[in-house]
Amino acid sequence: MQFIRKIAIMGLPLATALVSATAAYADPCLSLTSCAQQQVQQGVENTRNAVKTDTNQFSSNLKNARQSAQDQAKTRWNNASDATRQKWEAQRNKVTSAEQNAKDKWNNASEETRKKWEAQGNKVTNAEQSAKDKWNNANEETRKKWEAQRDKVTNAEQNAKDKWNNASEETRKKWEAQRDSVTNAGKNAQNKWNNAGQNAKNAWKSQKDRINSDWKDATSLPKL
Image (tube, rainbow, N blue to C red; front, side, top):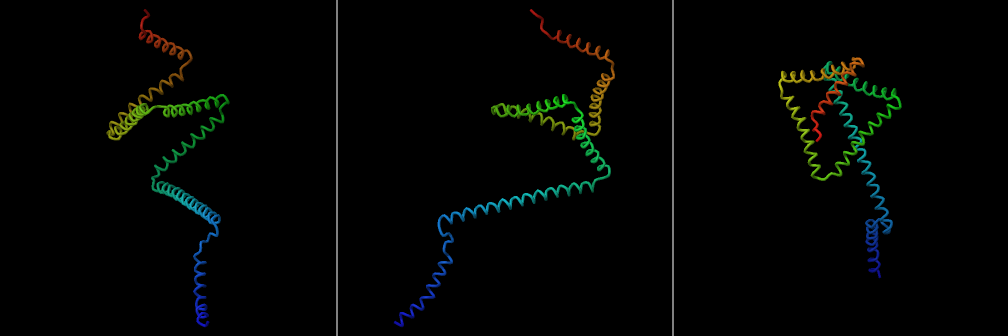
């Protein structure tokens, strides 16, 4: 009897330890439903924390990029010469004046003129949408053809830039003189028209119509 009692007394700490260990490492979910709820709640919390972290990181990157751009602008301004600063200020004032002039022009325009401008804007928007629809509805062969035409124009522009960059100063001045000659000729013709009287304008218009008529007659096939 004493032996059995000693075994029982010695077994109590072991049983207590086993129960404690079992309780310590037991599954915290008391049921499948509560476990699923805890997992869903934990997943939502993890997602919320991840989104919050990404948002904070994006805001921080955006703030750093804005600050970096401002610092670079300040550095460029501080390192620029007085002539360059005046040039930048003139460009800024030109843009500001153009925007203000456009606003004033709209505010001072009549309702008929505004509707005309809106119609022109809608015309441009519709043309862009038509171009998109035309591209989307075109087959692959037609798209490649259009891309080849676009690349041809782009290459021509790039070749013109390269030609200008590689030209000597003397050649550039020659090209500029030719360009100014054409521009001045157009301006002179416009000024001449604006300053002319109505009789002179009518005479020029009649002469233009007569030349167009003579050219049409000369290039038309005779009737059989």
